[in-house]
Image (tube, rainbow, N blue to C red; front, side):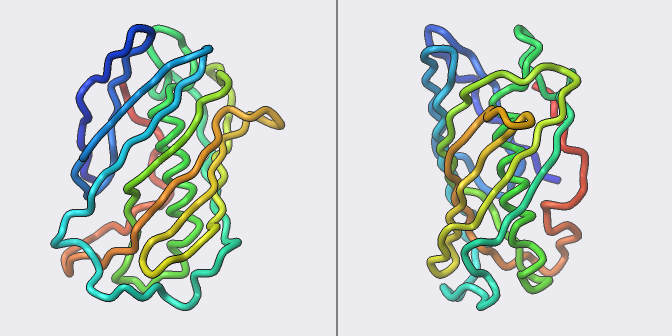
Length: 188
């Protein structure tokens, strides 16, 4: 598993240190806080040696596919100063749900990597609560995949937004396609 750390982003009301699990390089990260919520936008560009040569998506990837990721809110995925689910942890769950929506429909030598997330963190989730990230594939454009994502605590929306992923061909020695049942926690 490759972890890349983004630089701390500071705004008058917020500070976030985000950990990104991917085979991509981070191009930009912005955080804007307002009214108790956070608007996050980050874009990562695929590493050129990892991208698929063909622009065609597998024919089995059709809009409507869904994926889910359950996360127990605990000390590993909360913001230390609030004890609530952190925004980077919420985004990670959204990315994993998106990966899980399509992974079973790709050939074994392929996977996906996230490169754009646009989300709003609209409510808090307390420690001890299990939240569910849901992703729905909305559009397939060649190797580009467009998802609608949300994180729920029961009927209450914690986060909502969109996410884009790219289909890649894995290197021959790859041992993990991502999106599996690995531990959904990471520390801030």
